[in-house]
Amino acid sequence: MNLKMDLVGYLKIKRVSMKNLVYLVASMLVMGRVEAKQINLYNDSTLNGVKFVKGLTWKEVLKKAKKEHKYIFIDCFTTWCGPCKLMENEIFPKKEVGDFYNRNFLSVRCQMDKTDKDEDAVKIWYKDAERIKTEYGMPAFPTYLYFSPEGKLVYRDVGYKDVNDMISIAKNAVNPNGAGRFLKYYSLLAKYQLGKKDYKVIPALIDTARYLRQNDVLQDLVKDYEAYIETLPQDQLYKKEYISIIASLTQSSKDKFFHLFYPNGEKVDSVMAQKGFAHLLVDQIILNEDIYPYLNLEEQNHKDDVSMLVTENSPDWPTYKKKIAAKYDSDFANRTVLQAQVSWYEGQHDYALCAKYFTILINNYSQDNYNRDLDLGLNTVVWNAIFKRSVDKEQIDLAVECMQGIVERQKARGLYAGLYLDTYANLLYKAGRVKEAVEKEEEAIQQAIKRKQSETLINEFRETLDKIKTGKPTWPRYIDKNDFFGNGLM
Image (cartoon, rainbow, N blue to C red):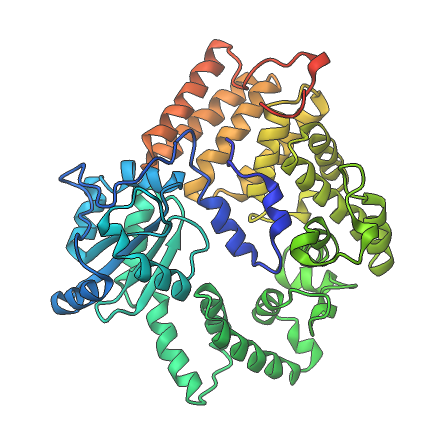
């Protein structure tokens, strides 16, 4: 299934954590064919679903919650957001969701964009919406914020959620001993700011401060923790607890602990029990430092590097390779440039070249060089460049192999497992493996039903299964080889 995200988005990312990237993709993951029409602020279409508070300002909501000793739930949405529309139409009206939220929360809808059609009820929240966005961060839409009766943020999540997940995260929010980690965070942070530095808990504080985008706090925490790590013997750093946090802090080749990952990252791989762990980190740094900025010259202000300018509508890839090979080696140069080429041509809708470089990448580098977070982008490329458009057997077979790995890695991610299974099934069918395709599409349907996902999604899977069983193409159209890819636009 198409994740509805062009990988050109990657090219605009600079020093952004992969976790935030996943939020961005996940929020688009289940858009399907939903149009983002004007959203009903209060969602009064059902008597059974979530009841959203009307006519109160944020200050009045806080006062009411404290008086009634209720938690607060804010659905932060935009009028153009497809997943937001799905949540409004298919999840918030569900009785199971309404029962839990109405019993435990004062629920509020907060529109984060502005339109000419905004009602007065939206306009009086303009200032509050801006403050909430600034203070708590909106990595994607929809964003869900959960506050204690005292008005402290206790949980945050993003993206489309099915019924099970929507109830699960709400339970976490009201359970101080569960995943409502922010209450613990504020308590531990207060002790830290009083000078009581417990280095065993600082990694968790760093993770939460980054998540909440509390940059001033984050800088202090990172500075203290790096100073502490520097006092440790080198051999002691090779423990999973240290490598995990060091990896999250290492975002530049100039960072203090980059040398742990390059040039000899095998020891890190062994500690993390993941082949290619160090390569993944170094690859991302190379992309962020040596490739992506030059593909956005105006934004990144590298006007003096004229040799890196796009030449004849395509980047000067040989120059990238040469410079990266001189700084690292030819293996890193070839692999990262291939990744950039796949992203670039997918974003340019030149799917013929996208498929070409994707095939070279998969043929030459094992899936040890990828992780579950990168699977979102891989799925997009496979769907757009190969499933929808390719008639090349080698490309289709490689895409099947790639999706098999993704499905295996994503088993634990229940919300998205069905979507990957759907892509896998479609490719198996296109490869002529009809029996396996039927099995995988049936699995996708069962996953979606089990997760109580949207009827839109389930019906789409059922339509696909029917086409497979009746021998109809599930791809947009049969492609004449003489018109292979056309202009890359469908």
